[in-house]
Image (cartoon, rainbow, N blue to C red):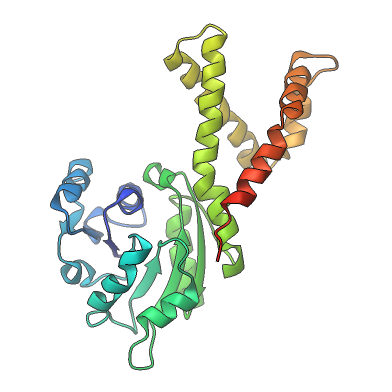
Length: 265
């Protein structure tokens, strides 16, 4: 499968980096375009085999999937530039533009009564390290296209094909969620410094602990409370710490943060 990525900002470049490390996509089958050559230099520095260009038309030639990775206000202009060159019968258009749903994409890409197979994608920046949680919702795509694209993004971490109504929730949990998880790591690291570790060592400890906690859930499909119970002995240290966190609004603040992040119409 050949990918053309339009936009080399944070998420576009992260996708290119992730795809370049995958087994389902050849590096030479990845093209990324951007109007600013300096952004493309960073891509080439990561892997010279990734094709780069400042011309969108050149980039999408021969691509199976055209990925839109840009700011929302640039989407319509980019679409108008691409529409004359898109193969509406064979090329997939996949948008990573936040807040622009499938009905909007159908309207933007309509041409002579036709629209291409469309996807709304929400990955997170961990896709660069092949550890993203990516959500996909499609319109006008075949089952085979769904399965093929899902397989690629599962290789870049994990991926779910969901109803469009769940995309905003996915955005908050997994895309915004990266920042929330990192803020927890930052707070825990500061606590580690207070306990006596250097900042570098504290961050190393916290990051590995987070990785271990996540692996317990993903490997054994265990429930968080079941794993918590294993380390909370009666009258022990862990339960004291958990209770102190809850008294200070730990769970409530997280849920309120998630709800505050839901995009407003």
